[in-house]
Length: 380
Image 1 (spheres, one colour):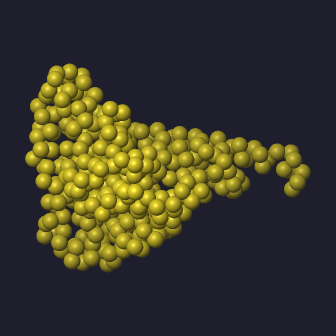
Image 2 (tube, one colour):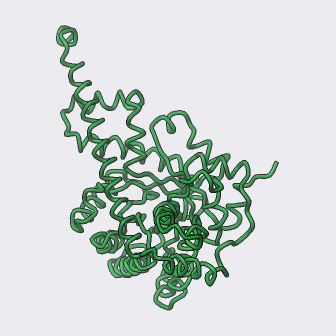
Image 3 (tube, one colour):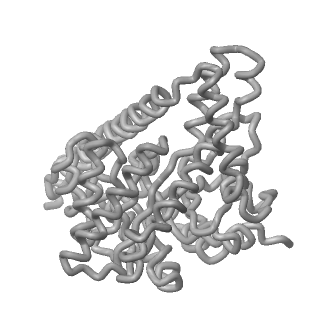
């Protein structure tokens, strides 16, 4: 039987899981995926945790303890999520050790409500780092304009970072510059550069969703012919930018000091349009040194029928640029698209965070009400 995920890994793509829950940890599912499906990393976000904590039973015991302590709702959320991430870091430690710290990473995100507040983001990144207290942790920081200096400062403090919500090449180049500045400062601050890692999460499927909507509205045959092409082309051009930046003398000086490059991570790789092949955002983005973080459904789909054709990125840059030029030529304002996607991304995570806070508040209130019942009082 063909091991398609092994072939993908051999082609240079690190397979990460875009999901985490207490149930997945308790059942041994994550460990099994590491051992049997070549999964070497985990990403989380507020939406993933909102879904995970909707299964209150898995968190029941810890919620009861937190209610008894009288912690705030926000404190409870951080303790619940950091517990899962710490556990996941321990599960992924063999992958971390086997890759000399490159893979085996697990991400936890700063409060998305801080996405436009630089100092608050920096402070929370430090807090999460010591709260989880694992070398194979990534602190996830959105690539908003306010997030860029926070990325630099966090790396300068010796903390590994997953930069998220990147949509445009312009912002991606700014992210790479923030990374280089952070590693340069970390070196000046005396940190061991071999211990610091970073990925830049470049979003894929959401780009097609937004651009396809606009192409449909334009309605011409030329516009419709471009549907489903922009997301892959945009990411391929991002890899070109990555190759350029990490081929400079500025980077080489840091590499000589032991620094790891900031790897491109393809995020949002589950297809939103059922007309598109369910593995398209994996197959068309195979290149050396990248990460593809996938929902479990995409991992299973690739395992079943994924097609690893070797490098599908390097060497197609002219073709990719033509796609983006053609999209702009039919009337799609790409600057507007990427701004809308960033704003929507932050808003979605803020909404999920609010949902998470609400669910935890209800669970804490229920647990407190149970502990305050007359029978409990009699037992005491």
